[in-house]
Length: 89
Image (cartoon, rainbow, N blue to C red; front, top):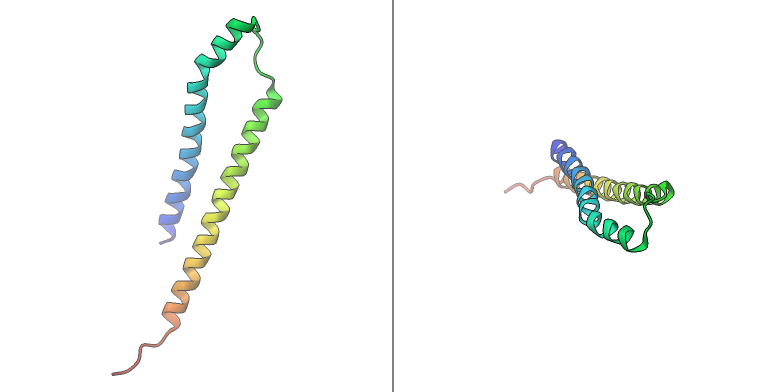
């Protein structure tokens, strides 16, 4: 069962990375058009990019924490289930 949670964690990480790439790709034309209209040719400040990265890291940590809580809860339930003795007929 642990392998399933490892797989889920891997796919959550990949989903976050894919979403990040997708957002960047979708915003690229908007950014170019904005730069055209405003005449600003400089790249965005690294601090803004770092803030986005930090937000994504927080989201990833939160997702991992929730997954760990779910795993712990599942283990408790399984332990309680296995600890119960079946009534004799």
